[in-house]
Amino acid sequence: MFPQRLDSPQAYDIAKAMMDGFNLHYRLFRTESARAKHRFETADWHGQQRAQRERIEFYDLRVRECSTRLEREFKAGEQPMEVWQQAKLHYIGLLVDHHQPELAETFFNSVTTKILHRSYFQNDFIFVRPAVSTEYIENDEPAALPTYRSYYPTQEDLLQVLVQMVSDFDLRRPFDDLERDCGLVRAAIARQLGEVKLRANFQINVLSGLFFRNKGAYIVGKIINGFNEQPFALPVLHNKGGQLVIDAVLFGEDDLLILFSFARAYFMVDMEVPSAYVQFLRSMMPRKPRNEIYSALGLQKQGKTLFYRDFLHHLRHSTDKFRTAPGIKGMVMLVFDLPSFPYVFKVIKDYYPPQKDTTRDQIKGKYLLVKQHDRVGRMADTLEYSEVGFPRARFDDELIAEIEKFAPSQLEISDRDGDGQSEVIIKHVYIERRMIPLNIYLQEAFDLGLGNGASKSAADRARAQIERGVIEYGNAIKDLVAANIFPGDMLWKNFGITRHGKVVFYDYDEIEYITDCNFRRVPAPRNEEDEMSGEVWYNVGPKDVFPETFGPFLLGNPVVREVFMTHHADLLDAGFWQAHKERIAQGHVFDVFPYEREKRFAPDATNTDLS
Image 1 (cartoon, rainbow, N blue to C red):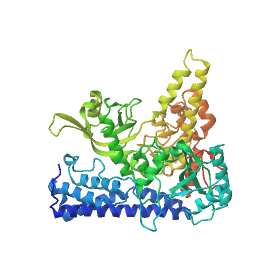
Image 2 (cartoon, rainbow, N blue to C red; image 1 turned 90 degrees about the vertical axis):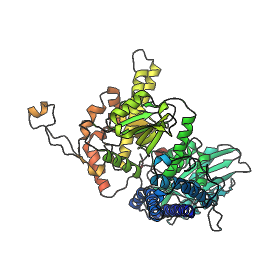
Image 3 (cartoon, rainbow, N blue to C red; image 1 turned 180 degrees about the vertical axis):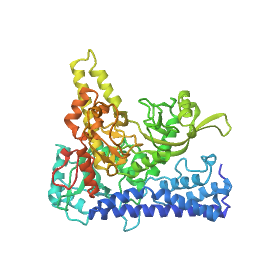
Image 4 (cartoon, helix red, strand yellow; image 1 turned 60 degrees about the vertical axis):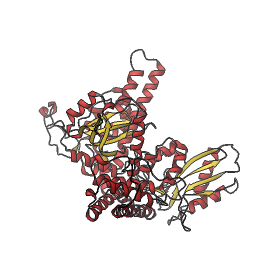
């Protein structure tokens, strides 16, 4: 229980210092997010990528600064728990009328857990649950924009209202023909609504901030008509002449889920009240967890907080046990899961086979690279945690034995609070969305449709599944190439299928920048002895890659080989990789947008690269 009196002057000073640290963090976060508009207007694509990468580090920098200040000014680590409990109460008082209370609570947790040992992480000491409601927060300053703008068009003036809606974002670069583009949007809305009558409440609600990512800006909103709400997004791009165009209209929850996918880079959007943005977006994507929406908005630390709360809630309402994840075991990562929970937990092993010339720090560096890079919808985002406690009773004994064998440095089993209930503590873990491994997806098709006795319809379905998986696999690699990423280990088991049927890469310990690799053709044999040799007889450097050698590892099945060679034979040609490497080295920024080519109004009119 908390003490009833707040009688420690240091407690208030500690709380105020932490609030100052958070306010500085969010001010810098907003400033960098707001600058994305200017970078978009001036086509500063490299600057946009750099800012997206650097902004991820803002939070940890501010936490370190604040922790250092508390230690220097207050000897925070030596303060008794009563002072910390009082500091939390003072901090709650400072959150009254704050516009980002949930983020500030997470900042409090980050700072205090950095200073103190995990044995002090008690429910009455950190914010395990939110203490301040985020409902109905709005910026009431006279000049402030509301969270979203509302427009009330009629059938007759819909075009003019759409033009006004786009113009209200005040983009300082001219459109090629805004009225033409809005006419295309109006026609798309008409097709989407069909013959439905426009009701008295017909309106368009649009979030006031533009969503920036790489070479695109997105207007995000929803159409309300009667009892129906239709989410939409308008991608705004630069055309080949350097003018702006609306490239497409994305309609419905599925299109928005792909736009806000966990496999894409975080958006930059200037938000005074982030919880209001999350609430608006959740109304459009009710199946998407709030933690993933916060992360998609660049607030990944808040995403981690909400994910962990959801995870604890799930543990309380489930009884199944953690187990070794199904599939082929990795050489570097030990992977386990809880069958009822849609995520996997990945722990770096202590020991690697000789062919894996790497270290724990190098592997962590690869995961950080992916976190900071444009994931182009093809690399899964990861949540990284340290010192995570799990109930020992929920762990399968075989899993504990496997962790003890392969990652003993990462495991601690303790008697929690002396109550006889053992706790498993994992020192460092990555958590990712569960996907169907691509090798299992393909094998299921073979087993169900291409085995003896399979019907023609089953065989047709199996071939369609194989074709879909293999084509998507090649598309995923080409999208990664466009993002300057060489996957390294390209085996099917390192890719997964998402619920939207997209193939996503998730094994990062061997990734490299394309520009750091040397793509070569296998030299012609010098003599018959070379030709007959089962060994590599030519020199191979540490960054050398021979694309034509991928085939024997990937294309042993004739059905798979046929589909792959029809659609992606160029991936076996060193020239394909060399050409992309050269363009990237020259400064060209490829981009891969989260919608299909057929959705575009004018596929060849914009200065972009869409798969």
